[in-house]
Amino acid sequence: MTRLLSLLGLSIALLACASCGFSPVYGNMATTSGRLRIEQIDGRTGHFLRQELIATMPGGVPGYEGEASLEITLSESIARLAFSPDQVAARSDYIGIATFVLRGSDGKEILKGETREAASFNFADSAYADISSQTAAQERVAQLLARSIRNRLLMGLKASNPASTVTEK
Image 1 (cartoon, helix red, strand yellow):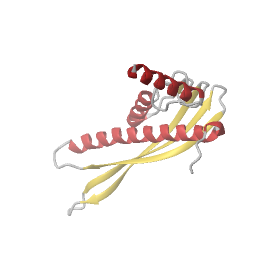
Image 2 (cartoon, one colour; image 1 turned 90 degrees about the vertical axis):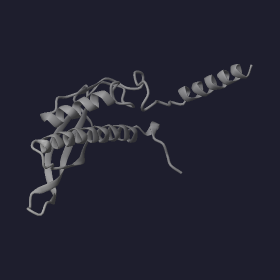
Image 3 (cartoon, one colour; image 1 turned 45 degrees about the horizontal axis):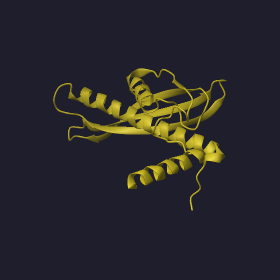
Image 4 (cartoon, rainbow, N blue to C red; image 1 turned 90 degrees about the horizontal axis):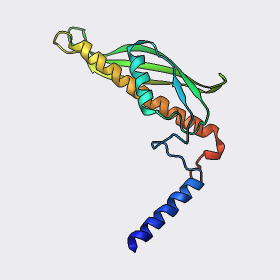
């Protein structure tokens, strides 16, 4: 009997959430988002960034019902942070700056922005170890950029849709 009441309470709670316009950010987004096409991004880091976005946004952008395409321009650089006593770089930052534009199926700009992320890496004494560390830093920067772009899309679309905004008290 207690189990039946618990099940009934849960179903009522779920029904109430469904009727208030609740849409999950991390759940199954098949009914809450449209299709998103992510354009090719140049370079190795661009490939990692695109793959990360595809993996984290498989159902499209929550809060946007239509089809959309995401265009990203990526610029990369390395900043030397620390030097050894013989003036050789010992620590560096791999910096990625992504400029993105979300366009609707009609080509109209829905949202645009820019994000910057950095991942530090050390230069090792062994041969080719610095190449491995720089490659790992590229992958980390791509993951950080993907997370930042996804968050900006979610927040930007939330802000542009006043019916779904949450007010803080």
